[in-house]
Image (cartoon, rainbow, N blue to C red; front, side, top):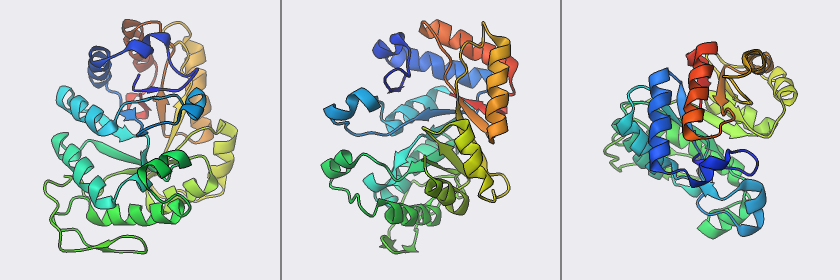
Length: 279
């Protein structure tokens, strides 16, 4: 609903608004889902709209609203583009969200790939990988601290007060991407990997080449299909994701309406453990 990629969303989502968002968030929280996701794009060029879509609700505003109407579900940016922000801007804005949600934020982070958007925002594109790595280290040194200090290759600061700040000092970072480098970044600098545009076989092959630290999360998209009408097919999809290495899945079942979407969430929750599912 908050992300509408061509051929990846239901027809009803095209006109969905705050009412539908409210209902889905409350249902997911009630049913015990692990987290909700929201992606970041500031502005998508018309030339790539047919591929990437154009509807991307801002994660900070969206999660701020969701935090007020839910009790336990977590919020995962999927993903926040590091190059668009100074690390202290993320620490302040998303640290405030973490405080408002009582420590329910997961920072999904990525280096980005849409050069036109980088150029529009005046953000460097060519060195975004190295710059992103330094930003992750800066965030780790800054979150949960009133007066953070960091000296790195691209970012350096000290003597500035960030108040309010996150209540989580060791906030989970999940790295998004579709390359081996994104996975290496995840196992060395973060607590999880959230790949996209990769097949399960590609994910499994990538994972074989790295040593995953204890508690490392692998968050895969799940083609849940029709949980209410195809129980066996849904369970088979979950098992396939787990065999590829998933510890968590992002669920997006087929639906005909907002009420049908919630029915599908209810059906899925009855089939699988809720500490391994999200929407």
